Image 1: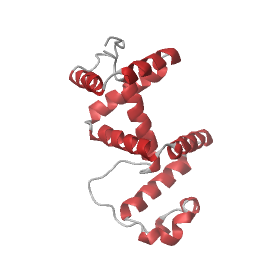
Image 2: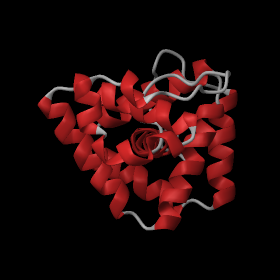
Image 3: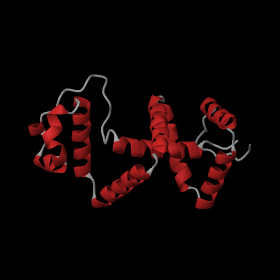
Length: 173
């Protein structure tokens, strides 16, 4: 069966886009977020978030915290990283709402995985990205041709038998 490289890619694509669109940065904490005063933001953060200034106090604390983290992350990026993030965000915004919802659900699935499985997904995604474009296309084609049941079996098999040492990708059905 095919490794779930395509699934990994879609999960991480969703993760990158969803995290940028919803929760721009930072680890999640179990404690409820405390309100964040506008004045506690640095001047560069305030400038970046100026469109929120008039409604800042009415935003939920979680959103305030997410915006504060995201603005700090943005300010720490290189120009190349910012350009890439803008491009990904524009791609996200161009998606139909249904597709964005699917990606949100995949992101939630990814976040519900134990950390070691999340790491495995990230590693497989990197291996997938390093494959020649023709091989990635072939894996995508094969994945699209599978029924939902076949895909589910592949995912279950992969979860039960993770790759040992980053072995070769299987190409059987």
